[in-house]
Image (cartoon, rainbow, N blue to C red):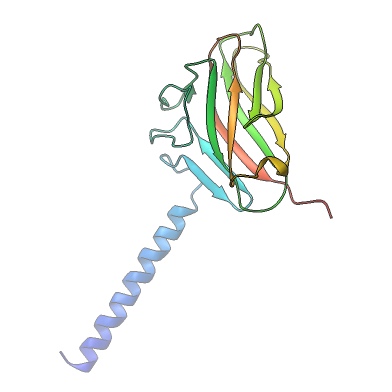
Length: 170
């Protein structure tokens, strides 16, 4: 092959590689990805339990995720291993939960054995419940073991969960 032919072929390969990398980068930044279950954005991470892909953060106490619905609790205690950013600070957790109606008792939420709050459904349908996990409960890793105490046995559905690290106070 002539030197000019090699140069043309090299230019074509470089152009093709740049085009493919550009397409992959655009795909990675799409907010409407239909199959991604975990989305990372700086200090924030969102887990979508209503996607078709298996939701890895679900622990014991949950039935399999259903597309468009989320995961239904299947026991009196349910666990989610929630990923967080590696940044330092308290963790704000916001959960989209659903219940079929009023409950006899609120749903207790803890990180390991540290209670961080309770959720009492206001009615039927999805609701957002936010909790603050102090940085001291992140002693094991950057994943938080969320424990849901469903003492009255009535199931709940988890649709999504997000964690955001609050920057430390100056």
